[in-house]
Amino acid sequence: MAKPRCRRRACRLSALLLLFTLLLAAPVWAGSVRLATLEWAPYIGQALPDGGFVAEVVREAFKRQGQGVEFRFMPWARVVVVAKAGEVAGYLPEYYAKELEKDFLLSEPLPAGPLGFFKLKNRAVSWKTLDDLKPYRIGVVRGYVNTREFDARKDLKKEEVAEDVLNLRKLVAGRIDLMLADKYVGQYLARKENPQDADKIEFMSPVLEGKELFVCFPKARPGSKALRDTFNQGLRTMKADGTLQAIMKRYGF
Image 1 (cartoon, rainbow, N blue to C red):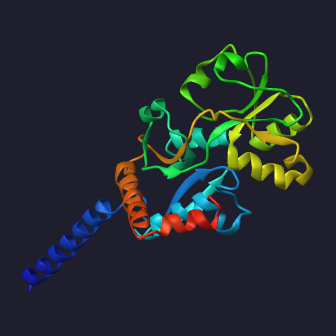
Image 2: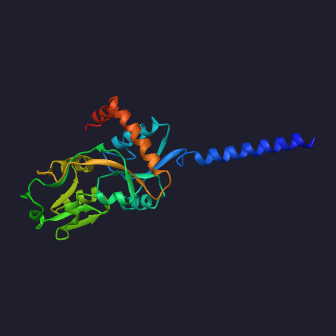
Image 3: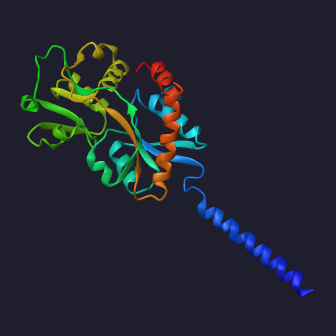
């Protein structure tokens, strides 16, 4: 009688070991993928339809791979800190910078608008090179990646704030000369803040740089490469079947 009990015990042990092995092999992101982000309309925002263009694209790309997404909204400087520490699965939307590759794996890109300067229409301000910007007070957002050349210039008069809308208010009030922002973000915020303000400002030419957006996955977090690859695969299918272009069109990009 002892032998059957031993065999049953051995079977139970084998089953437990198999279950344990399967749990170890399961994706570390099982359940919803938590991503840190900011209020950055019209690209992403809690009050926007479906969360905005970027939120809808990211959600759909993961959905196609069987993953849900949870967005955690916070100030941008905090977004980068918690992502770098691996407290979330990733953060978005980010502009490319070589320095990011030290701590993050970057996704394939999403389309974005041009990055440049807004000014008041009644101000005679122009520029061709970064040296031309020296006389002006320039509003920037703390922690944003802009361009390597601009960010490296310590001789420019940059005034940092926590979010784009604060720069817009300072620009309209005449407290800064230029506001550095994505074209669509600046225009959206001006219309939302006060339609009359939208008529007071203009996006300048030349643009500072044409931009793309990325989802960044922290190297400090196990499973980031697999998660990045999962997102990329979903995004590729959206590009191939026209879904990405359809979402862009619906949001006016």
